[in-house]
Length: 323
Image (cartoon, rainbow, N blue to C red; front, side, top):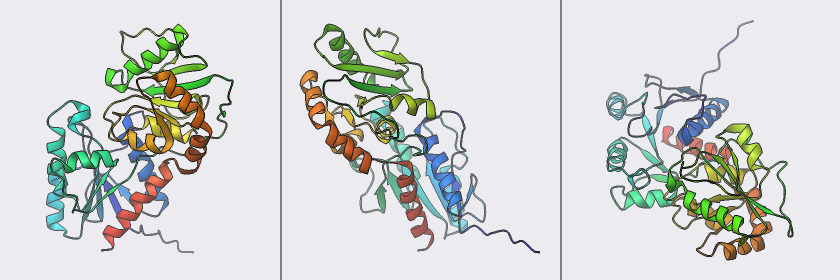
C-alpha cells in the first residue's frame, strides 16, 4: 500500500519562535494560533522559504529577538510578489513610556498587506499618528486558551455573601493599577468596604504591604485559571493597556470586570462586561453587585476566547492568500 503525505493547504511563517515558558501575551497568541493553523491543515514555519504563502508578523519589544526581520519581508516580497504579510500590532509608546515603538511599528507596517490591532483604542492611537484607516485592517481582541481558561466549576456570587475580587499581574509596575488595589485593601481593612475580599496573584511593588488581601505568587496556565475560578469578579486598574491578557483570562473563567476608565483597550471589554470603578469605590461595588448576575451571563455567552481569536486570524489569512 502506498501512503501519500497530505499536502498543507498553505504555509504561514511567524516571525517569533514559540516558547514553552511564560513569556507574555505575544507568546500565548503565537502558541495558540500556530497550533490552531496546524489543526486546520496549514504548515507553520519560523523562517521565510520559497514555500511560504503568508508572513504573520508581530513585535517582540524594542529589544526582542525576531526570527524574521522587516528587511527580510521586504526582500522576500520583491522576489515573490504573491507573498502576503499580516502585521499584528499590540503595543505603543504610551504604555511603554518610550519614544521608539510607534516609529518601528510604522516602518514595519509598510510591508503589511493587512494590519490587525488588538483593540480599537490602539488602532485609534496609531491612526492619530501614522496609520491610515483607509488601509485594510481589522480589530481582533486577544483570547486565552479555552482548554485552560474556562468557567466550569467557578462559583456564582449570591447576595449576603462576600464578593471576592481578584487581580493578577506578572509585572510589579505601579501603572498596573496597584494604587487602586492598595486603596481597596485599605478600605477593606478599615471596615469601609464591607462584604468584599481581595485576592492578588503575581508580583507587586516592594513598597506595598497588604493588610487584608490574600496573596499568591506568580503562576500561569492551569494553576492561574484554578485560582481565578475561585473568585467572582476580576478587578483591573492597569492604565493604557493595548490589549491586556489578564482581564481576558478572568472573563474566560466566568468573571465580570471591575475596570479603570484609563485602561486603554481594556475599557472596550469593561463597557460590555463590567462596571467602571470610580473615585467612590463603595458605591461602585454596590453597582457591581446589582449588575453582577446580568454581567456574568453576558460573560458566559460573549466573552473573548482563544478559539474565536484564532478563527478570525485564519479567515484573514485565507482571504489574503486567495486574492
